[in-house]
Every structure is written in structure tokens, then in C-alpha cells.
Image (cartoon, rainbow, N blue to C red):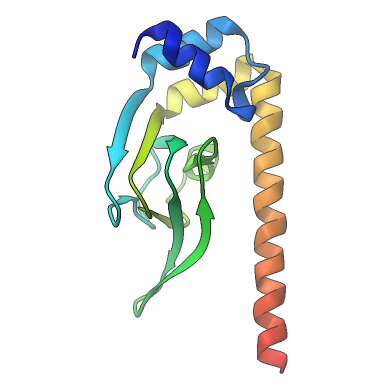
Length: 151
């Protein structure tokens, strides 16, 4: 895929809809396109976060792992990002990510991710909205679990 085609495909992602052309070109040039097969884990809970992944197509399961099991907490689809929390916090991964189907992603390095946040207020706002959505989603899941335990 050419740089122009890659940039145009990024423009279709809501998170990048208002990002300046020059920043999209930088992202297109520096991000690595990676693919994963169903069942393949590409983010492992507890590992240090070095990259965020923009899902271009396919479905990704978000897993919380304990010593006994791995539970699917959520499913992320095309045009969504995973792995950004560990980059923002400079911490270990809070969950694992496993391809549910064939998945294609753009892998963004920490440097490129922070460059986009610093240089594009629209990107930064998009990340904040996504994190707020996930916080609400997580709170709803906890309420559902607590309701189930109370019955």
C-alpha cells in the first residue's frame, strides 16, 4: 500500500478524522502494519507496553488473566486502538489481547504515539473519549458482576 493510500485509510478512522495531513503521513510512514491469526496473543498482561495497536480489520478479545483462567472482558473491532493505556502510564499491560479472527493492525511506537498527542489536540481528545468510554464500560461490567453476586 502506498503512503497516500495508507494516509487515506487512516483518515477514515474516527480517531484520525481531524488530524492534520502531515501527522497522518508521519504515522503512515512510521507505523508498522502487522497481522495476527485467530488465537494469537499479541499483547500479554504484565508485559511492559512499548506499542499501541490500531485495529484496521478483524476482532480482538481483551482478556483478564488470573493464575487459573483467562476471561474475555471485551471485544475490540476495526478503527479502535488497544495498548495505549500502558503507553500513557509507562506501565505494564493491564490485560492481554488475542486475535478473535484474522486481524490487521498498525503498530505505533511510544514516540510516534506521544508525538501525535502533543501535536494534534483532536487526536488527544479522541484518546480521552476512548478511555472515558472504556471506564464507563468497565464500571458497567463491575455493576453486572456485583448484581449477579447479590442474587
